[in-house]
Length: 109
Image (cartoon, rainbow, N blue to C red; front, side):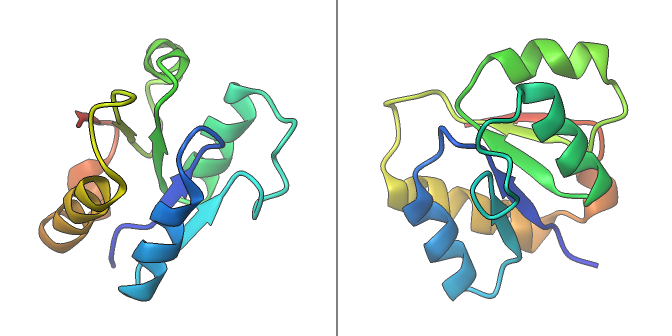
């Protein structure tokens, strides 16, 4: 089984497009019809779908403490990386880690 991602609304949608071109399973807030949903709903969706939540919203770091059994989170510090850098890093994670290895972790980019 491979890692699947869920990108919250703060993540550039071009990242989802690029990952899909590489065969990675990706959902976005819009795809999942969660555009007006709160952060808790996003985190629960990612967990229920066993997807790694990719976000630039630091609120998810606090929520992870409340929901310790989350699928995992990749936190991208805003403004520090280009779309291609983020895609390359997410592809690396996809290639070298399993969902079990990512489970309940927070990775920082």
